[in-house]
Length: 433
Image (cartoon, rainbow, N blue to C red; front, top):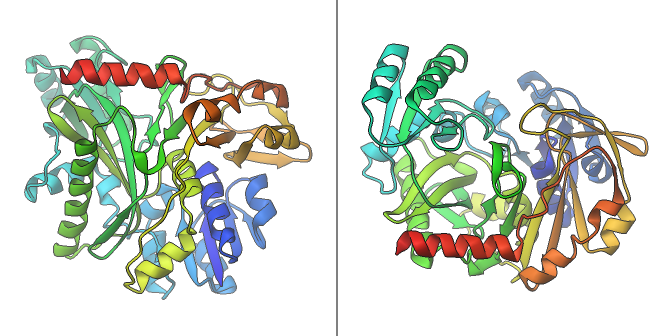
């Protein structure tokens, strides 16, 4: 069996490792020379991802299944073209992916179908109307461009801006620079969590809950990023998220999948919902038409079956129930200096054997292999994953990990620590009380 993988980041390295675990021959198209993908791919094509290029390689390699990692190619309609040419694709169509690519579509879809978890939201296309709303709104707000932002375009009052003047300036800039639509939503207070799953038709199976640490700096400070790391406690859930909130999030996802099918816009492939557990219940922040990054690293490492097997089983309408290791795992991303702001990419070297002896697994991301050195891009460099029976054991493996990485880089050291988890538990307890 043969699989074609599109993408070159840490999430794609996790997908690739899951694919080859089932013995498939891997063909990869990546915009960068990701060393992890290069090592395990039978054929590795370095090129910008375009519809014409993907179709040419797919026609030549004849994969049994195509897997698309990032959202960009899905939004560009590459999955549509592959399906049109009779390739099996484990990814949604561009129309179904509007759940991610248009935040206003997602909010209106939930509202139209009476699906719980929606957030009070207004859509604006005119600067003056957005400014008027901001001036009259009493609650704190969140400002979102309607389209894709790679996890970095959302700004929150009290975190990224303070008063109405700043909010109006941001709204005006977004409408001028980022597209024709803007969403202004009521700010929520709580803890975020990611619920990922695989979809086929009306069916969805879930992966373990993960929490992504988005802020650039320790103590959850600094700008939002694509994700600095993540934690999962496998099927035990997250200790600071109540079980009934996890179950409600699952209900919301099931209803989204069913209603998409009923409306003649069926979804297939990976999906994940970004939720917030609040004192008022579970709220949906957004839907993403793919696996998360870094969340995919946690979940696919825990899953016993390969993602290839999952795609095959679901496509043939077989009842697929993934099994998961009962472990705790922690992911921490190594990023270039200044990531999230004024980025200064450089070169780093890593001692892979030393990291492996410590029990750390490496997932290469948006980096280019240049002999013994890794050339950083403006995005994340590589992820380190630690896994153990308990949180303390997982964290201990990160101790002195910096000794094995040379060069200019940054890595948050507080991701998944006992102290950070205890703070989250205490915060949610006080919020609910």
